[in-house]
Image (cartoon, rainbow, N blue to C red; front, side, top):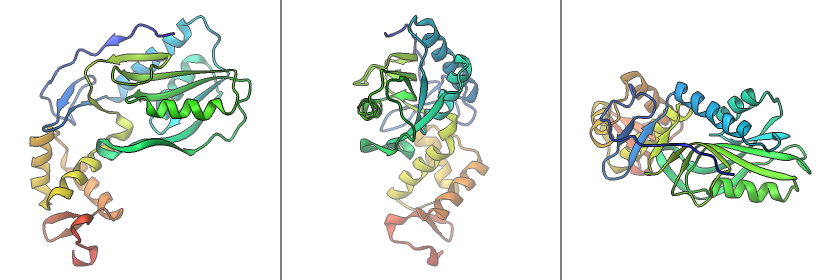
Length: 253
């Protein structure tokens, strides 16, 4: 059963990324729009999703399954609204940091409990291509539950799979940054830029603002660079930052 959802009618707001309010859209040059969702908006969407599930006259689920990692927070809020403690998770991967798509979603960490003859509700943050949910459903069907339903915060009209429940329909495709992936996505966008050419930290800040309309606070930029260096993805030589593909090793910094 597909329930009515609030249509996404946001446009390009031209606002700063770090100062963004829930629901605003930020244009990324040469690619696609980016939308930042705040913690407050995320909680509201999860409660809306739970209301749709409770509004359905079907039996409430025996077990809620969060798809890790994006579904962890929404699933916990949904469980709170449904007054259930029956929550577990599986880990699937489809998207990497900074909107880099893997070829196909894969199950990384399977269930550790039996779900035979149980009514399941699978929760994720977004249905983008629909591949993640499709893989999850196929995997769970092999475990012989009595029923599988799916729910997401955002259902993109471009998705090949329609979830049973969603809080908001996104008709015009955009990349959604949730608060639990903010630092990771900033690191991802920075790494993409550094793969193209080495730049200084101030110049990288300007590039993110100019090309992606993302205003990243200085302390966040420094933290992101430190983490990328720690992970061996970026190194520094003088004032310039290099992606590892450029062949610069940390010993030269």
